[in-house]
Length: 282
Image 1 (tube, rainbow, N blue to C red):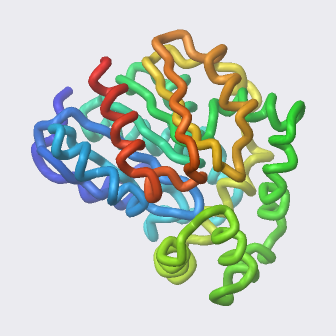
Image 2: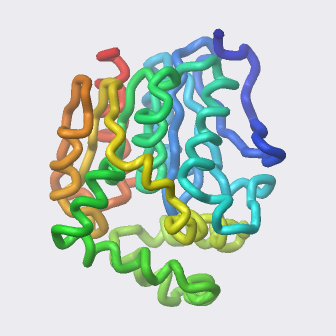
């Protein structure tokens, strides 16, 4: 199945409509770019031009909870299996195989689709967040558990939304403390809070109790690169180091020194280099 020769501005699954940013050569090999929390497809804007210049077509969706037409109300609607199936549908619409890249929560989904549907994934590049199994192991054995305190906070109904309601409030201060620039925080307010996407993004965390435990431990069998930054205040190196044991294919760990968690916006060139190196190796 070949990629369509028209722009993919949206796709649908189970009655939900997902918005997509489709750029680059229409006949280029497809790279799917998955954003994390609390960002949308625009977080890739500084990465995409380099990928397009090398002949790749990039598809960056606003994922479940972020696209206005894909905001189901229940927590269980955001379980990881649903999130993976959304992206599987996008790849199918785009021709059936793609290089998959994800940052933060998007990396979690990228790992999962590579493990569950290797037939759809040519290569995997994960930014910041390790394989879900490696993350869980680290969270129960290392200081990763302390670094993940916010996941517990996000479980509370309405309180995180209230903390984000006021510009300059607790949520804004936390993002600045984690390394976001002032312009990044302004983008968060415009594209997440004002756009009505905050609760949908938080529901990814609130759906964690509905995770299918049978998914844990699944190994990845496609060529993979893990990109981690040593200034990441959310992700400890222990989980990152555990990824190699969960990949049964060519694997590389790239460590960015002096970079914080927000790799696509603050280390775009390094992110593009890692993505291209992995894609070109396929």
